[in-house]
Length: 145
Ligand SMILES: [Zn+2]
Image (cartoon, rainbow, N blue to C red; front, side, top):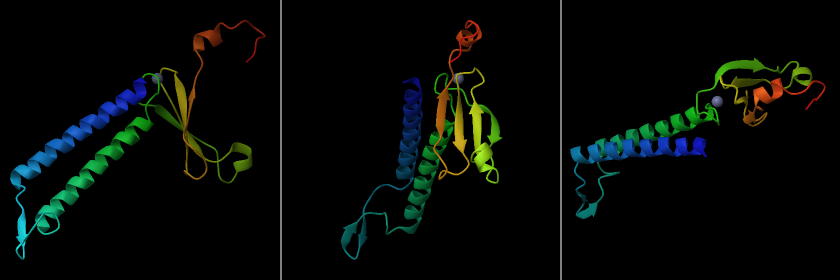
């Protein structure tokens, strides 16, 4: 819940930035309608500079949303810290022995690992939660998983 709440919070901040940019654009260009051969029309599509500014605005917002999603993907699901220590594993040439290439990231506090395939075709990103390391450390001898 904390993980998705943080993501929603980041999206809300992005929406706020988008709203402020939108208001700044329309403060510079009042949203009056232009006449196109006597027919009132919206400025978008008829005023080249305004249309290009809205194109750049759209690209900026899409980039911010993409950054939010990318940042969220590489965060720990438990503590929300950035995942660290990428380790590349697997090999295309020795796929049967080591599996397809993928990168594994870990939470520095031991909450879990994220397995990211090199190509999205070969698999999905998988989060594996670790068990409590203290329980595992003090488990009686001879008792296996
Ligand atoms: Zn963590």
